[in-house]
Amino acid sequence: MKSGPDFIIIGAQKCGTTSLYHYLIQHSQIQSRKRKELHFFTSYYGNGLKWYQQFFRTKKVCGESTPYYLFHPNVAERIALAYPTVKLIVLLREPVERAFSHYNHEVSRGFEPLSFETAIAIEETRLATGQQSAWQHYSYVARGKYAEQLGIYRQYFDYSQILLLKSEDFFAHPQATVDLVTEFLELKKQRIADLKPQNEGEYLKAAIPSVDTLRERFAVDLARLQEQFGITWQQKSQSTLSESTGQLGLRTI
Image (cartoon, rainbow, N blue to C red; front, side, top):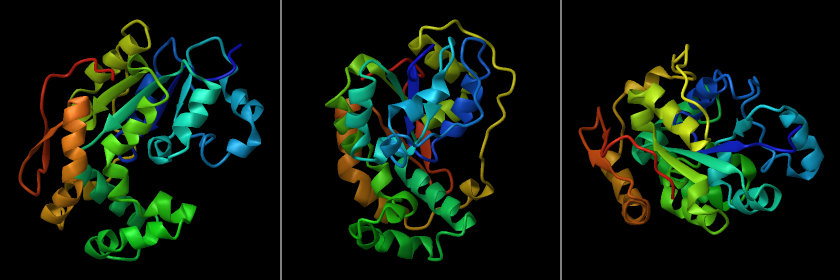
């Protein structure tokens, strides 16, 4: 029996991680488990590895998906100490769209009473409190600074252990993306029966306020992301903000 995961989907939040995990556990070589997010390396780290290992008692390939892992500053080191050879999967979505989707998610759950413009204006003040609830619920801009977060993981993991995928490619070509992941995990290709999107919100089609302001706040990190990882998005209209660029392909860092 295994003592831990073969793979972890580490993020980012509101980038399609629920759908990707749902598709992967339909693969015959991957263990099916209903509980997607274990939050061990964040909320339950104090429980110890034995608590975590109970979820991976199988001979099949197995993993978990907790999108908070990419954003949390201590998780990369914690994973590396416990499972230095684990494979990590990252979904990245155009950060302005991701921020607005995150905001609407928090509104729908009753955590966010403010307008989107006000919420992003006071985000830094909220996060400065250091409260975990603020970092989990109100980190609309901070979570979209992908180069900064990936830089931490690069300190602990070999490039070949991290697969970067663009959410836009995944949404447009779910089966092809699953094929890339199974190739990364050294598994056979397999047609997935249920490719229905999971955890989808109608608000994603709405126009996004404060696009220009947000683009300015992401500019430095996006330049780093393109330079260091080759990831970029085309700027489009406000209602159809982003478009994937480049060919869909296996990309490790």
